[in-house]
Amino acid sequence: MIADIPVNIPILYEDDELLAVEKPRNIHVHPTKMSRGEESVQSILEEERSCRLYPAHRLDRPVGGVLLIAKNSETASIFGEAMRTGGVMDKRYLCIVRGRMEGGGSINRPIRQSPGKPEREATTRWRALATADAPWSDGIFPASRYTLVECILETGRYHQIRRHLAFENHPILGDIQHGDNPRNRIWQKETGIDGLMLRGHRLSFLHPVSGERISLTADPDERFIKAAELFEWEEHLVRE
Image 1 (cartoon, rainbow, N blue to C red):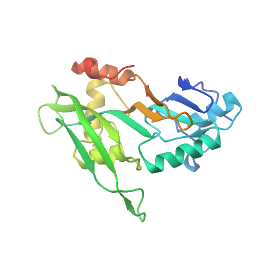
Image 2: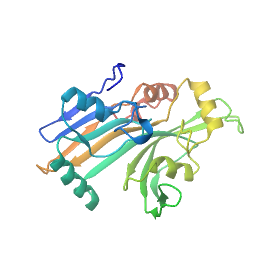
Image 3: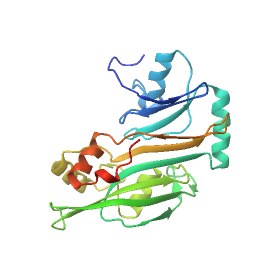
Image 4: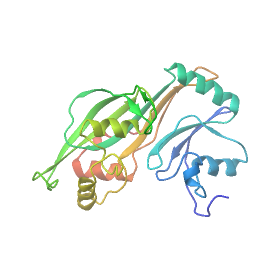
């Protein structure tokens, strides 16, 4: 049974085969062994619609943004096979990282899902959208530097963007697992913005039945809007 706390899940796209929603942050995509008793996007929508649904990809619990869901097992199977062969889905994420990143590039570094598991190839493309020098100390230097970055997943490994950017010494702000917690606390104190600064803002995919390419965008949430106003990044935020 889903908890009585209402959760708003906006619909971005729907047809007979697929449903795309704007996943709220701090909620699981689907039920897991570690989240027994917690609601998930899948469980909420299944209860509302009285039918089985099949998430086509994943977003971490603290990440909001575009989430694609298949309405039947046949479509889910077609989508799963297409994703394994590559080229079917273009997933883009917006994030704010510590430090200054300029230009763009690719991070190619294998990722191990957990200790004892084999490493798997992983590639993240990125481009810097805007930078800022904030007038407060980062604990070491007299000013703090931040960059608004768009990341594009070439592969979909566990915490891939978060781990790749941390490896580059530009961890995502608010990442308590892979990031810089002392500087996370400074960021939150100075800006009043909390949570992982990562959002699935754009998804483009080939429809598994019609073959049509469909592109969807989730507008920046209130935290990204606040950061953009603070650092004059408004023109760099991607909106529908």
